[in-house]
Every structure is written in structure tokens, then in C-alpha cells.
Image 1 (cartoon, rainbow, N blue to C red):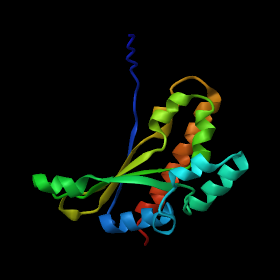
Image 2: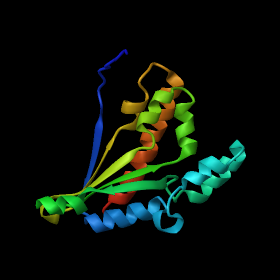
Image 3: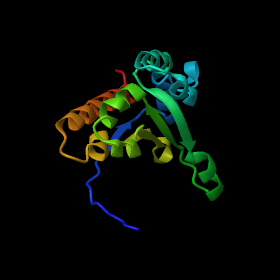
Image 4: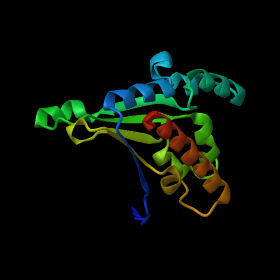
Length: 170
């Protein structure tokens, strides 16, 4: 048995807003089509037989942001049992059509696709943070320029999503 450990620098992005946790979650749910589509079902990728069919199916399930809802982990709910009252939910969002633009170059990127967003209520309910791993820092792990360009494209799309859900309108 062989074991390899590779050192790598991870970049973490944090957006901070004065918006309430509930408002940020509501905006995120809207942008990823959570309430209208109930997420991208596993059957979408199992039942398709062509790229065109996959594209049509995925496009039916993504929200206005171009991302779809896959899953969520509500850590805040169970942490309350340990007297931690902060709300904290990890969302898994993505789009197989975006994913293929990276995975065709290096399947190791699948370890971090689809991306995850941590939506975290600030102390004393003073606003919300949205935190995520910068996709290019965890997906583009080799020198392939096409992989790097695709991962940086995901960086931009994810940033646009987070900016839209954390923006304070004046």
C-alpha cells in the first residue's frame, strides 16, 4: 500500500454582510432554485443518454444564478444541543455543466466539486458571513492552463452568486 501526502495552499473567501441570516438564506434559496426545483436530482445524471439531454435536464434544475441546489447540512440545529446558538448551514451548490469544464482536464477536482458555501450567523445576530473555498485553489492543482481557466471561471460565477445574496441595497 502506498500513501502520498501533497501539500497545497487553500484559499478561503469570506463575504460579510449586515443582512440577517434569514435574508441571506432566502436569497440563496432563490438564486439556486431550491424552492422551485427542490434541487438537482441524482436521476438527472443517471437517466440521460446524450450531452444534449444532460444539458436540457440540468438547465431545468438550476436557479437564476446558474447553480442548482444539491444538499445542505444544518450544523446550527444540532449544535444547539451543546449550547451553541449560532446558525450555521453548509449548502452544496453546483452545475454539472460547469463541473465538466474542469473534470475533463483532471478528475482529482471531483474531490471539491460541487462547491460548498457556509452561511454563518455572526455573533449577536449582527449579520451574516458566507464562506467558501476558492474553487481554483482546490481544483486547479496542476499546471494545465485549460483547467486553471475553467476553475477561475467557477471562481467568478461563485463570487457573483455570493455578492448577489450578501449585497446590502441602499
